[in-house]
Length: 108
Image (cartoon, rainbow, N blue to C red; front, side):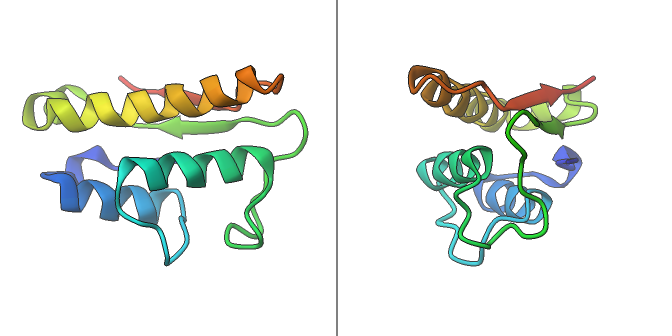
């Protein structure tokens, strides 16, 4: 899944872009805790239908492509760090439960 970081300029656009790119539910709370919960639900298959038809199989991963991040890092360094942190945090939660990490992030 591609997250078009070029479209992010502040916290509001960050959450709007991430919500659209990851197809998060309408009730997504536009905060990092809500993002973590949605990613966790997606990784565990506990989406209650909000992410149909894409549900990760038992050994599948969610590959997230951030594209060229240098401009994003310059424009919004704290948002880039927050995004990478929430992906890492979700994977940590999974591994602490004995599950496989499910999120891989790529960028240039």
